[in-house]
Length: 483
Image (cartoon, rainbow, N blue to C red; front, side, top):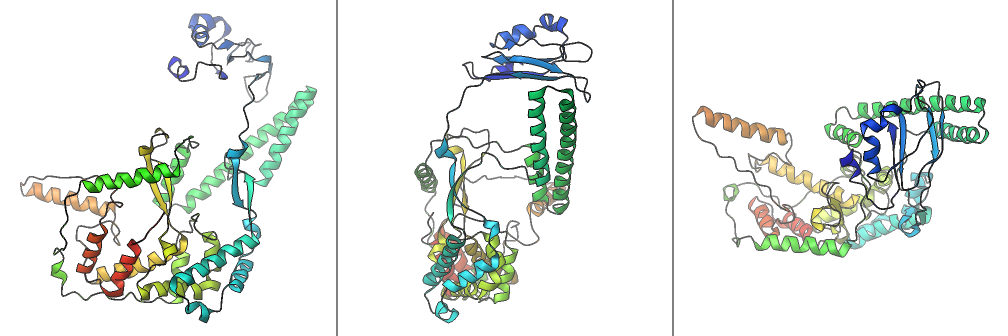
């Protein structure tokens, strides 16, 4: 206990230590507990017996102010009594400016049909839309979606909640909680036995209802995620290691941008000079080339839109789930933008903008140390649909022409970390059976994706037979990105 108490500040910060210490009154002094807590300026608050056997087992220690109005009320549901007391706490200053945020009100109150009709009314007819330059057409679609949301569901300033509401807390449980709080106030005011019995009954029922609601909520959540190991892992992690509230930090967006830019520059300066041409894939010179990305049908775009995870980025004009719902109405316009990008070999400029969120690598790390953060790049939903279309065509081309590295397991159909481990383990076993020695080299690359040389990547794509407007699309994708 001394190790635990030494963590707390020794100033006038309020501290209360309480619980079932299981020490009868005659053993408090011999145990040394009082001397230990007194050394940390914690005052013992004497009380009447807290157990039906007449012992004081439930103790309360406070700092700096002592507790007052100590009472012990017998309970029929426990051998221990209900210990109540009053403590004086300092009034914390209000920080209204830190709890205000811009948000859209009543998102669930607007119907998807009204969003679709309002958006379509602000868009030009499809023929005029198709004749627009690609960047103009994309901006027109996004601005129409954005103006629709501003009209039907404008932004407003509200007080930000410090914590999220328990997902299992239904309207019925909220009503029961209000009744329980009302019964508690009534009993504290009247001190009547009948009010105490009523309060105990409501408390017991509410506890059982909450336990049942939690059980049903997580049982349903686990059953729906039974075939998804990632979701199951996230559920158990949230239960066993609930996320801590974000720590305050004085770091600014400019600090992070400067740090990440300089970090990549330092890493790239350590690289040796790269050759201007590459011949490692020259054996594929006879392979059919991919000169043009194929246009996609409206049905294929709709299928990809519905299959994407509807994560919403701050750059999205409307929530991704809403866009998925109204996508059949906007399908001709979305398909025009997608196919316009594929045929022209140009990625719309607005799709090359990302929102960067710095995340602490571990919750226990110092939030003031900028090197302890990991940057997470968020892209708009429509840009990820375009990426998925191109990814499908590129993957099919590489698979059909057997251009994948035979040792690759990542980002490859029917492959994962399991196949990579099995392949390495099998080679080690085979080498051991042949009485050969094995050397295993494991590399942990710092900022691996951020330090990919774009010229090298584009040259590798060209050596794999990707040329023409297909190659120009990838060059456009990598050029002129912003965050």
